[in-house]
Length: 275
Ligand SMILES: [Zn+2]
Image (cartoon, rainbow, N blue to C red; front, top):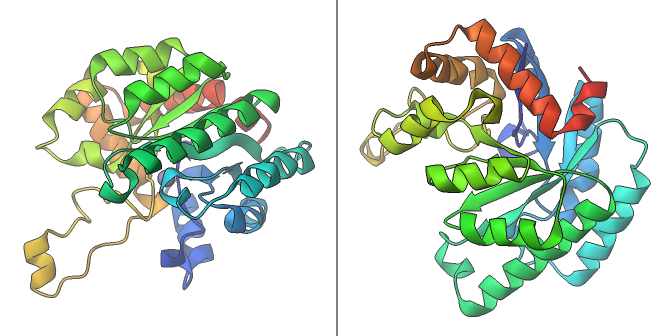
């Protein structure tokens, strides 16, 4: 079996055929998806979606949604996490983190605001005894600083694309690193080297659907200028993405499935009850 540890199945891109997309993923061997929420108004929808398909969810405020968020949303997150305390599908706080790639999020004010929401959500994760699902974009060192400051019980650094040293630091704090579509591009040599050399125990798989399409779906700017729409990534791509990782590591798909499933259950212990 495969677990897609990061899939935005609630995204508007799936409005027309969401149930069919989930069924297609199941048919291709993806038994379980973890659905991270990105903003307060999406939490009930993500919870309902996970219930409908037997999946897991995380509640949180994504750094790209920090400009619109306010402190009331943090209080609401605290309440929402309490309200679903007995829901076995609640497995993490997420998606939270820091994004220092998007220019509008890099002003001194926005950096500080992102830091505030990140830190407060770490405190909530600690309070509720939950791991976290982290968005890491040019922000690994500061994310690590927050983790050391607050002390949470691990989680996943999603779409990891940092250095080997940063990877090691996350691993030491009880994190697994999420690998997905970005690793399928041959030009991603540093990322592929990491995927090949990190300890197997540190790896989990993800699609980040509908984002980060693997190379076989991705359309270049040139293709798009010629009228080919950007392909839509879906959780059904996970086994093929996994095949790339299996190839990089010289493992069978079965061995990789076993290892990454065990890893996902270790860093998101709530998954044990769902699989
Ligand atoms: Zn995401």
